[in-house]
Amino acid sequence: LKGYLVAILSLVFLIVVIIGMFAGNSNQCQSTASDVSVTTSADKEAIAKSIHDNLKKISGVTEAGIAGYLGNTENESGFNASIVQSNATFNEATAMNASISGYALGLNQWDNSRRVELLNYAKSQNKKWTDASLQLDFALNHDGTNYDLLKQGLKMTNVDDATEFLRAKWERGGAGTTSKRQAYARAWYAKFS
Image (cartoon, rainbow, N blue to C red):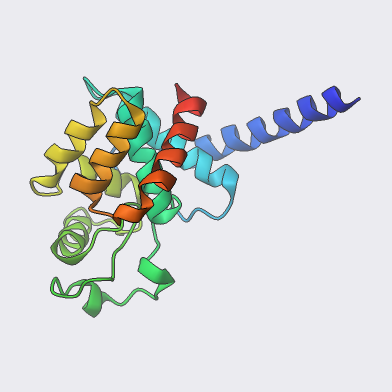
C-alpha cells in the first residue's frame, strides 16, 4: 500500500511539473509575454528545468556547469525572476541609479550598473525586467563582459568547482554561501543529469 501511495504521489507531482512547463514557459532564450514569479516548489522546478533545457542547447555547456548555475540561482533568488533584494518593493528611480548597491534584481540578483543594464535591455526589448526568459538572454548575451565568465563556468566539468567559480567570478556572491550553493547545485545535477 505504501508503494502505491508513493507511486501515485510521484505521478501527481510529475503531472504538475509537466503542466507548469507547458503553461507559458518557453524553452528558448527569447522572452515570452508572461511574468514569472516562483511561488511553489513545482514552479521552481519547472523554471529550473526550462533554464536547464535552454542552457543545454549551447555548445560546450556541461551538466556540471548548468548545475552550478542553477545552484547559484536558487541561492540568489529561489528562481523568482521578479524578486528585489531583501524582498524590497521595486522602485524604478532607485533601480536606475547605478551607484546604489544592495538593491539587486531578478534571478541572478544583478546590482549596481548590471542592474541598470538589465533594466535598459528589458526596455529596449519592450519586455518587463521580471521576464525570466529575458533575464536568461541578458545573462548569456548582454551582461557586458560578464557573460564570458558565465559561459566559462557553464563549460566546467566539476559541479562544486563550477558553482564556486560562478559564485566568485560571475555572481560575486557572499563567500560564506559556497557550501549552500554547492548543495543546491549537486541536487540539481542529480535531478537533471
